Structures are given as structure tokens and as C-alpha cells.
Amino acid sequence: MTHRNRNKRIITVLLVILFYVSLTALLMYLEDQSPARKIDTLEDALWYLVATLTTVGYGDMYPVTYWGRMIGFLFLLSSLGVYGFVIGQIANFMSTLSEQKELGLNGTSFKNHVVIIGWNEFSQSVISHLLGAGRQVAVVTKERSHIDMIREYYTYDQVFTLYSDYNNFDFIDKTNIRESSVVFINLHDDTEKLVYIINIRKKFDNLNLVVTLDNGNLKHTFQNAGVTYAISKNDISSKLLASYIYEPDVAIFSEELIAYAHEDDEYDMKQFMVKADNPFAGMPYDKAFLDLKMDCNVILIGLVKITDGHRRLLKNPMGNVKIAVGDYLVVMMDRKGQEKMRELFHIEEGISH
Image (cartoon, rainbow, N blue to C red; front, side, top):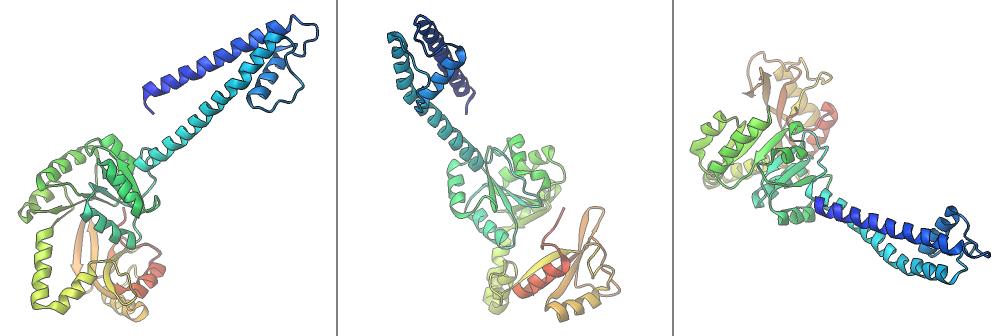
């Protein structure tokens, strides 16, 4: 509701109150002239006013003079307008609440979620995989039509939508971006993405930024600007295409591994954080490899250690490597193994902040 409309409605309400106060005072004056009056006090007049406006009409209070009855007639007729006004205001209030929720103006309480800046078919495809992995998503778009499109596919507890200009960072804060695990910058071209990344990092510290690039040569430029992961869509497509040409079976498996497993016989790769109560904390990597294979039919293929805020991926390490609290285990599993891992680790897959 705009400030102008709010003031207009306040003035309307005050004028209505003034109108009824004046009529009530006039009614008391007119009825006071008759010895057979039923309305003696202000309380009687207000009771009669309310009973008439609500069309209850108890009949215990009523005017006995001619002009008093004319005022009662005005009360009765105006009640229709009052009902229309009240119902209209309630409907407008409910509509405003619904609109504010749809546009994201009330903000979200999502945590450890993914924030996507910009909406298109590619981001829709990304969301489908994120939701399949049990992650919540907040989408920021500056196109009103995108909000309606998103609401057709996803529920409010899955995807939060925010209608905002991308550079309005006070509004962007409504996505609870500070509590997000990843922020995916999904704007139109590499130049726009780079400028936006520089600006958003001035407002928010320690964001885990991910971006896809049209020009793979800019990868180091984006990393120097503070991006955690810069991915070239062309590089991924070309590598997968080459694999399909020379190793089609490997390519099919590779495509499955980088997506969410929807069927029990499908495999994908995930990473799980090792907490203090995790049975693998302090265990040698080789023993964990064997235990996971035997107990969960899960294949351990790597270990991520975080030192001074930097992530170091150890790909199937050799030697006396031990798993520590805070490390991430990178594993390959089917859906049955995934359920066993969740029970064992007491945590959802993916990075956590």
C-alpha cells in the first residue's frame, strides 16, 4: 500500500466517524424533546447506532420523534455502505498480505539455502536438482512475470521468491543471504556478472559465490574478484560431448554422477561433513573406505580438508591420512546408500556454514 493510499483511507475513516458522531449527537438532541423518549443517554444512543448498523435491531432502543426516525433511517441505509467499505478493506488487506508474501517483501527464514540472482530456463533446471537434493532455494528476479511462473512449479517452503532490482542490496538481504550456503550469480553476460560480484561483495562479506561463464578464459579473473567457483558451461559441454564420442558408456555414467539420483539404481556423487559425533572422525582414510563399502555400499573417492578457510580436495589419497572433525567425505552412492549415509552422519549432504 502506498503512502498516499494509506492517508486517503485514514481520512475516509475519520470522516465516517465524524459523520456518525454528528448524527448521534443530533439524535440525542431531537429525542430529548420528547417525554416518551427511549434514548436517554449517550450509551443508549451508541447502542442503538451499533444495533442498527449491524442490522441486528434488538428493539429495546428506538427513536420516537419524526426526525429521530429519519436519522435512524439514515443509519439503516448507510449500514450498506459501511459493510461494503469494511468488507472491501478486509479483502484488500488479505490481497496485500498475499501479494507481499508472493513478492517476498516479508523476507524468509531459510538457512543454509541457495540464493539465485536472476531467473531463466537454466536456473529452473538448477533448482530442480537442488530441490531433489533437499535444498531450499531463494530466487531474486526483477521481472514480475517470473514470480508467477515460479509459483506454478514450486511451493513456498521449497522456493522463496523476491521481486527486486538486483542492485538493491537492502532488499536482497530479505533472502537471508548472510545465512545462505551458496549464492549463484545467474545474470545475462560475463561483464554484468563481474560488475555485480564486485558490488555485492562490498555489501556482504564471506559469501560463497558461484558463477557460470560464457568465456572460460575469464575464470581466473572471476576467482580474483572473490568467486569461489567459476564454471565454464562451454568447457563442461565440450568435455561431455567428447566423452560421448569416444567413451559413450563413461559419458552416460558421468552425466548421472553430476546430477541428483532420482531412481534407486541411479548413482551420484555427494559430500558429507564429519561432525564430532561421527564414527569416522579420527579414522584412517583406508579403513573408512572399506567400512563404507561394506556397511553402506558407498564408495569413498575423496576427502576435503579446510585449513585457514581454504578448501583442499584430496582425491583418493594414499598414505596415513586420517579423517578429522570438519572434513568432508566425497562419496559415490545410489539412493539406498544415500539414506544410510544420512542416518549415519545425522546431516544432509552438501557444504555447511
